[in-house]
Image (cartoon, rainbow, N blue to C red; front, side):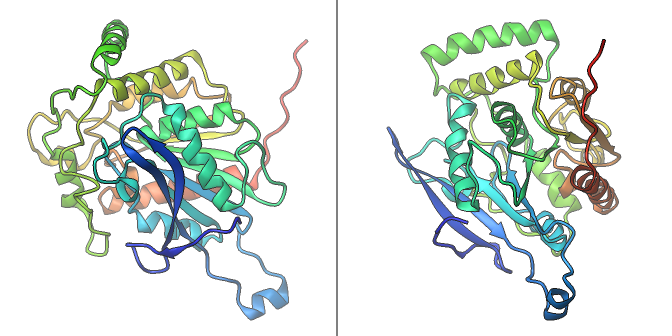
Length: 345
């Protein structure tokens, strides 16, 4: 691992963070922030017996979604408990990386985050241009972070061992003809009014649903970093997302297994109801499932009954199911080798 200054993170309990300088833009200094939780070192007797943790050679890199940051301590502890080194990246202008005067979350091309990911990998002891023979890498992305990591994995073959996506935002939740029209409008708007905010369509119901199902030991959400209603959506940013989704529809051909985890169903958040605590009220699950077929040659799907948009923040029974499925996926992805494709005659 490269030399970095690691300091205690706001999550406490063994979490640390380091700042990754990314230069500057017209809004000033740009940074990303990498958070880590390392596994417990092996005991004396484990070292004597040569006993290793199941995933002692695995690094996990997590990327959050839109209007979000990393705070899922339970998810980090799951991976660290299996011996993996867990890292989470607060992208530029999000969460820990947001600086005064910056437009929160704003980029005009998702490939901009290649710089953030490269800096994170360097701090983890990796290089973005090549893999390692001594360690394996799992990419874990939620919502827009799932889209970002899917695009990155397709552009950087041979680095990751597997990709796990938690309700990835792979397509606009619109009919195909409407989606094409929206892309045309966004292209025009992004050229003329890139930082013009769109209407606020979030009634805060998703945040309420998470609060309703949270358990007493869950980490409180920092509303300065993850507001009750989403951050303003700008034409330039949404155009960047749609461009990325268009690349997904064209086919990414990710070269490693991809697991897509979603709720079993969606719910439209027009008004508050208990249904919103048992469904994805942000994205349309059927659209995610359809778009997932364009990610690569090996795509696994896990649909979790009663799950929220972030399946790992769901009510207790759905959350347990999500972790059970994650465990099966991780073991399948990291302990079994896929057969080489056979040539056809």
